[in-house]
Amino acid sequence: MLTEEIITKLTDAGVVLYETNFFSGPIPAEVQLPAGGIIETPGSRPLETLADGITFENCGFQVTVRGENTAVGDQQARAFIREIWKTLAGGHGTMGVANEAIDGVMYQNISARQSPFLLQIDENNKRVYVANFDVAKEIS
Image (cartoon, rainbow, N blue to C red; front, side):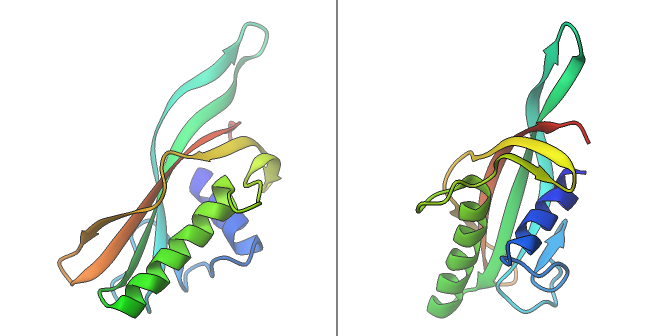
C-alpha cells in the first residue's frame, strides 16, 4: 500500500523513525515534536494501455509535520518536512524517487505539488506544516 511504501522509503533513508517521530495517519498528540504523519489523497486517472489494461496508478499523498510554536520549534519542523520533501521529490542535488522499487513496487516517480508550507497553528498552539505529492507507480 502507498503509505506503507513511502514510510519504508523514508525509514530506509534514515529520515524518519516509524512510530517514534513519523506515523501512518494523524500525528498522535502525546509524541515529542517535531513529528510527522502521512495520509493518502486523491490522485488522477490511472495509466491504461490497450494490451495490458491499467498498468500504473496515479496516486497522491500528504505529509504533515507538527512542531512547537516557538522559534526553535518552527525551525525544527521546517527542517524535518524539508528533509522528507527532498528525499521523496528531490532537490539540492538529489534525484528523489524516480524509476525505483520500494518494497518490490516500481515507482515511476514522486513529484511535489508545491513546496512545504505552514498550514495552520492548531488548537493546541502547534505549528502544522504540509507537503503534497503526486505518484506514478505500479498497482500495489
